[in-house]
Image (cartoon, rainbow, N blue to C red; front, side, top):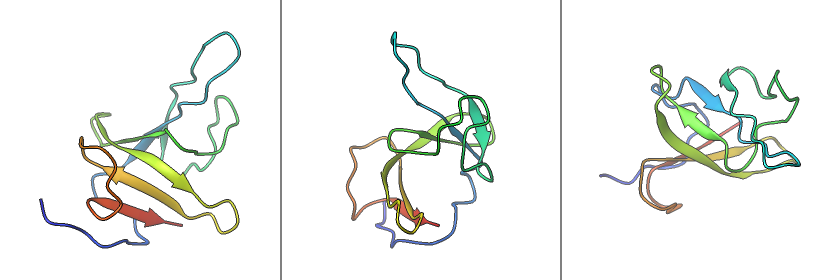
Length: 93
């Protein structure tokens, strides 16, 4: 797979995200949200590390691995291999 450079746009196939916020007692939110939602309407958590990138069929296509709380940039790793910042990822605001 060719290496991709960081981008400030969302990939065409990245339509939704799954909230992976954990709660006391071991429960996880798991709410599926549109990319336009930066905060989960179900639990109120902001998109954060370990949230999942989903395609139009709600299939996992990646994981959010870094966020910058000062400027809102998010780094998403797309694919099934371990996170390699020089491989397939996008940084979006």
